[in-house]
Image 1 (cartoon, rainbow, N blue to C red):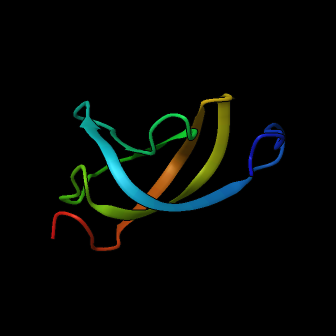
Image 2 (cartoon, rainbow, N blue to C red; image 1 turned 90 degrees about the vertical axis):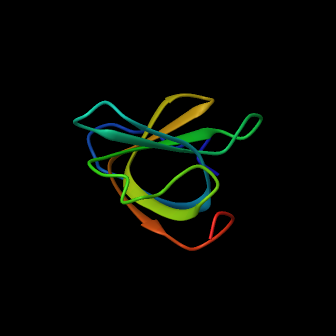
Length: 87
């Protein structure tokens, strides 16, 4: 759906739902990842993991960026648990 969407001067927001595959914090920012190849991988850049962990179903929404064909960046991003695999 986002293959030909250009990013640039205007902000585009994107919302997705899925199962977390990555939860990582560098002490300042938290990175939440969705999807595995062959689908584009989605990375949400936020401030807290709010207890979410890989396997949890989440909703992510944020400013859309597409650094390359295989990756989508949501920054800034809001993440909300939906309930799911690890509950």
